[in-house]
Image 1 (cartoon, rainbow, N blue to C red):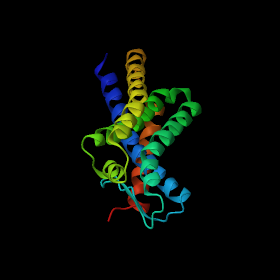
Image 2: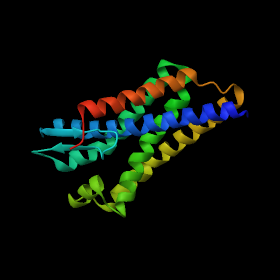
Image 3: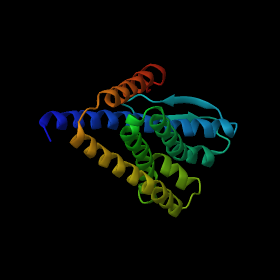
Image 4: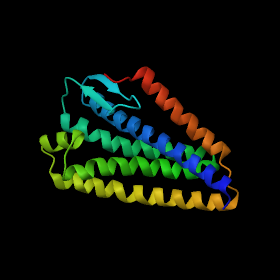
Length: 193
């Protein structure tokens, strides 16, 4: 593999990681927002600043357990939907779609699954509201397995692509623009405190 292909692959992977991380935050918080709205709760604020800890402030909250669980579930479901949309729009986007969906699932799986042992943030709220720790661990396992396989397949496609022609112009541009758009929207519309 030539150095140019390695650099192109590295830049593509970096763009996908930034895009997938931001998308994970957005889809997770969207889950909380939808959970709040479906239970008649009021969303006070959503923070999606790219350099802040994302959060959704809900008050009054009528069904706190539903709202807190809606975040990671929504993060997985909406992350998968965006990945499917990417793959459906252009076949060339399949590598980015696999990596994006996998990262969305893995981040939510680790966040809640590890929370079974060390509950922080949403996991702490889940435990405090009565969710048994085994349920958090089960969520981590159930979401982690498909996340792992999606990422593994995305990396395999990336390697094949690098060995073939190593060009990522369209795919890189789409994910880079997507990452910039999410970061800018978070800064402008959903700033931190």
